Length: 296
Image (cartoon, rainbow, N blue to C red; front, top):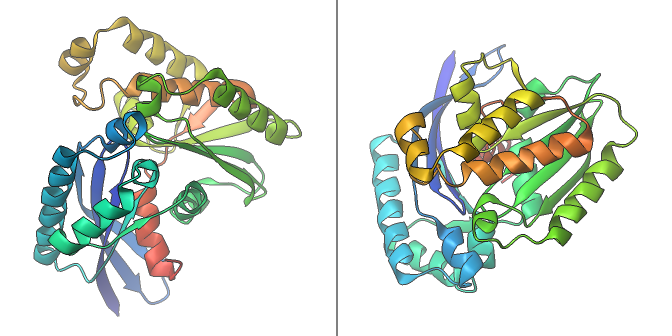
């Protein structure tokens, strides 16, 4: 007997808002399947408000309300039976974040959970990460967002350390990450990876997914440090407009992609990793899995 459930996850990030609609296929004697039914991405850069001014602007509140109303209608059309909306660092740090969440609940009837960095890392870890983590290897998992980056170290199939740092693409674009933060990240990575040989990076986030897609590699193949560095140099040589015209990048991707790669390259350098795997996972996937497992 086969049963199909429809769940939706809404990820309110610092660079964009996403809604993932997933078909959960249960079959006796087989592993539950999570199949993407739809993914809608809305480029509302909340981090630009939250990290520079400290509050989400009226314009962006209106855009959020419209987006949430659209998400609500789409969930109805897709016959979604369960959903969860999670907001990360931009909503967390904006002093009117909770007020905005209340307004959206009132106007769009969608409840938003504002989660901390630790919860964010735990939700992502409950996604398909275990499929990529072999018990005889050591991995540094790096999830780069607009406002923060989550680092998690896995050894023997288990998480041994995890930390969230206020270093993300939107912050870097606005020159809001000082040397002290970079030094803290370097220290943390070197401290926790020192005893391990051959650390492998796992990267998630929209920017590394785009780089991986452009590489044309198969999902189970890794990108090398040299390849990632060459892409970084090439992207840096292009203007913002050229990245859009010649590489087909979205307008809200063409600027943040460079600081994102910088974070991954530094993580590889400090952990002495020579390759990075890019599985198709992220917060929205993690939310669906965590809902299904009853974690959230």
